[in-house]
Structure formats: C-alpha cells, structure tokens
Amino acid sequence: MRKTLLVLAIAGCMGGLPSIQASESHDHGGGMGNAEMKHDDHDGMKHEGHGVDDDTMDGMFLKKKQIDGYTVSFHVMKPAGGASMGGGHHFMVKVEKDGKPVPGIVMNTKVVYPDGKSESKKAMAMGDWYMAGYDLKDNGKHQLLILFKTPDGKKHKGGVYYGQ
Image (cartoon, rainbow, N blue to C red):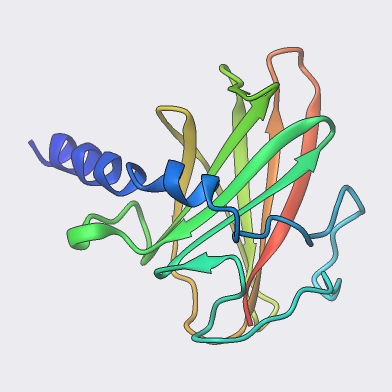
C-alpha cells in the first residue's frame, strides 16, 4: 500500500514536467559540458533567489544538457506529501536520444555538498526517470553528478550545479 501511494505521489508530481520543459522562458544552458568534473569547477551561471538558480520554477529545478549525444534532464524537487526516497529531495534524471527515453540504463548518482563532503547512490528507475533521494542543504551550491551505462555497454558522465 505504501509503495503504491509513493508511486502515485511521484507520478502526480511529474505530471507538471512537460509544461516546464516546454516553457519558452526556461533556459537550459550553462552547466559543465563533458569536462572532467571537479568540486571547484564554476559553471558561469547566474545564481539568485531562495537557494536555487535560474532553472528553478515554482520550487522545482530542471536543467537539460547534452552528454555524449544524449539529452539528459536533471530535476530536483522536494517530495510531495512527505513521500521520501531516502532524503529530503528527489534527484531525478531522464536520458533521451532523438527525443525518446533510452531504456535499459544503469545509473549512479553523486552529490558533492557545499562543505565538500559527498554521497553516492544508485538511481532507481521510475518510468522514464531515474531517481535517488538526498538531503540537499537550503543554502550553498551542490554538484549533482551522474554516471550511466547505456545498453551498448558505454559509460557516460556529467553533472550540473544546484543552489547558489
């Protein structure tokens, strides 16, 4: 019963994603590209507001970037109704090729916190998205990193910054 409620809560929250992704005013630029990721890298983005950057709308963070020819969507949100997947925030990732989700991906996530400490978790498949729970701080810049293996056996890595 609890799993069913959790899945329904997450699916309900994700229902608003297409409208965010389609927004003309929503900038998906910036980020680190495919460069080797280090905690002290700077992405050149303007950060302002309430502990989030310009890619945040209504408390939800969504950023798309290209990684090795794949379009990767990074999404962070607080769980609705207290439904938590191991942390106070859901770190969610979707990988697409030619506008379609890529099935059969294995993904690991890592968060480097503002104090330099880090934590890694395997992402769990939730439909077209992969998700892991983390306790992200209200203040400070977090580095959100992924390493994923596609069905062809190749590994890909990338990341974005979340916070100010």
